[in-house]
Image (cartoon, rainbow, N blue to C red; front, side, top):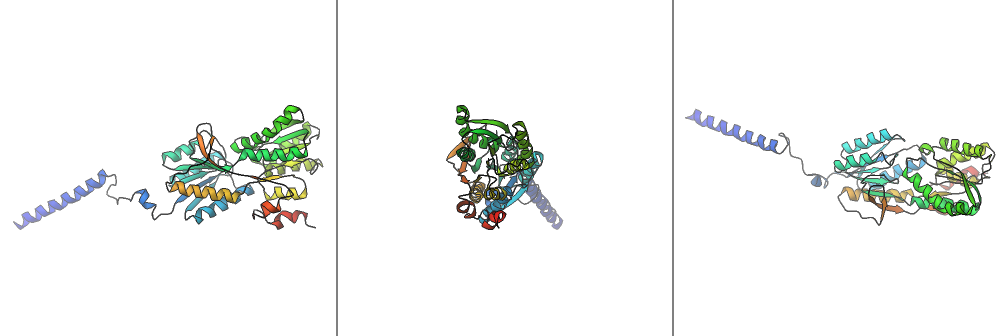
Length: 357
């Protein structure tokens, strides 16, 4: 009788264990502990933002990286930053890594405006929203675009230089053709130049993109422009301060640095130093601290599931993208101290050391 009772108890225990295993299997957990829902995890876990950057080879992007990290962490979140140094394949691979790590939101500075559309799609399949930072991702369903008014940047460049040189032969040295911002800058420049071109006051004698925004490629372009026009050029607009550096190097080789006005943008230290030296007439200051703080704020909000509404929309070839665009500031020799230096973007000592006696 005792043996029968023990047998019945053993069978009952086996049945109970089997039932538990079946229940776990049906729930897709294979006997493992059931994880808490992601929303519940967010109550205790830090938000993690992925930041996929095109490059850190230019001074400007080092500032973006450091300030964005500082801004995200000040909001109690974490950030993982990867930079591809101008390589599309590397950036795609790095972005895929961030997605596989399970970041809560992905922020992208695309090297190639078209290529990163595939990453936006992959992120969405993983339930991760994507913000385009500074540069728009084309032909994608990007969730938000945070940048400066880049057409306005080009307008500021052209307005500054046409005041100095209302008539003459102009050269335009563009940025990377793969970068949507390069097209926006150029559009802004020619919005100002075109009426003067139509009047016959200005002739654009050379217009070329500079691969990867490098000073070396800008140097090659400007050297070609000078040769094609027997050095008879009256003004140059360069798509940023890095390309302006290449332009001025080419001018210096012909003894023309400081004699032909050159406009740039980005407020890089070298560009600002050239302004106080007199070889570059202006730059455009884009307060990066304000950009990083706004992008970080919106990234953390979206990662938490909060709805973000922007007051502007920009067509990226596929959709009207919600866009937050900050205002740039034209800077010349007269207002450097009140803008770039006053904001702490560069120190007075750094800027003026090139002209110290």
